[in-house]
Every structure is written in structure tokens, then in C-alpha cells.
Length: 263
Image (cartoon, helix red, strand yellow):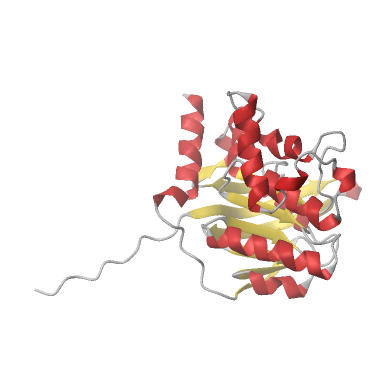
């Protein structure tokens, strides 16, 4: 008998939003930053989010990264409603499974490069030399090992952003959230950063990137255009990359939702 073709299991929905809203202000001065967002993002997607200033892009990213909460609607992360996740577990998920890359780098100016990269590891138990060794290995990946003990003020914009990406990745997160990661960089530095993000995506990470630059959408597998707090257009440009092996099953369901909310 001919063998039956086996179909690959569907990719895990990393993010599911239903009628999500975010309101600011009171009474007659209410501003709808997000107005009924419905969205599903699969593991392994590289999503570019575009739109004019004030359309809700950064607000959406902050909610997805558990830095803010919606006014109404539902947000499920790896199949679990975020409203049911404790504040402590959300903090652990932010620290261990979500990597943030900001336009302004957000490096601490009085810390050297290696200590900045090691910051996300500070909650982990272990010897300092092991923590610094892990940070050093990540900096080597971005060809910054010779600048480990430089201060941020001694680096160029492109180097600062590479340090910020190294810090975002040092914990091996499953989701990368990037808010205008090349906004302060020249074209050459921007290309370097985007090539690095592409390699991160190829390794199986899910990436959501806010950008004003239409040229950067060529790196994405999907483009969301936002307007007035809503998704005006949703376009898939490339096939989503399948995660490599079981390891990338969204951080084994966000490390079994941080060991079932730490029992």
C-alpha cells in the first residue's frame, strides 16, 4: 500500500488579538489609540508594521510585549489569555522570552557594553563570570568583542544598535519586538542591522518590527498597514519560515508558561 502523506502540524499562533482597544483620556477627551484590533500571528513570521505617526503602532507593540494592557478586548499569548497570567509570570516572560529593540537603544550610559548586554541575565542565579561569559559570546556574534569594556558614549550609532540587539537576544527569546530599529542610523548601518535581523528570523524567531521605511518591508514575510488605531491592510509577502525543530515551539510554550505560573 502507498504510504500516506503526512502533513506538518499547523504553526502555533504566537499572538491572537480579538477586538483589542486602548483608550487614553477621560469623557470628552478620549483618544482611541487602538480601535478593535483583530490579529493572529504565527510562529516564525517576520511582521512589519507601518503607518503614519499616531496610528497606534508603538501602542500595539507595547501591549504585545506585556509592557502595557488593553482597555478592552482579548490578547492570547501562546494560546493563553494574558488576562489570566499573573503579573509575576508576565515579568518572567518579558525577561526570558521577549527581546526588545528600541530606536533610542536604551543602553545605560554609566555601564560598559558587556554589563549592558548582561542586564537581562541579572535575575538568573549563577556566578558573575558565567553571566559575563554569555554576554561576551553574544557580543562576539555581532563582532563587538573588542568593545566589551567601552562605554556607550564611545560607540557609533550602528554599534550601539548592535549592542542593543545583542542585549535583546542574550536570553534566547522566542519573540523579538523592534520599534524603529534603524530610525537613527545611516543607510549602511541600517543595512547591517536588517541583515542581522534577517539571520535572527532564519534561526526561527518571530519578529514584529515597527517602521516608517518602506524599503525595510522587503525583509518581512507580512506587512500590516495601520491607520487611526486599526489595521487598514494586511499583506503576506513571503512564505512563513517553519521553526527549526522542537526547540522553537515558541520557547516550548514559553517554558510551559513559566512552569505553570511557578506552581
